[in-house]
Image (cartoon, rainbow, N blue to C red; front, side, top):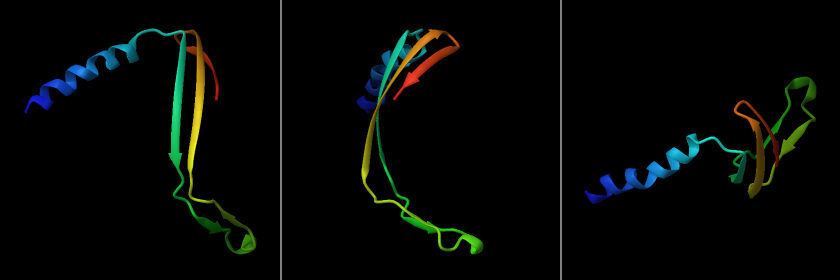
Length: 74
């Protein structure tokens, strides 16, 4: 019962920070592929694409020049 009241209180600073104007933003990403393989339609049936199922990681950096303009590296 107490968790229903404490969890929203802990999220309030994060919500306020997300709406505040910023000059820089750093993101850390992770993903997991679930795509295995596929082949092309009839004229391209010799074409086959396959991926290994592994975890991937990434980091991004965004610099905001104004409220509606920014540049990202990542």
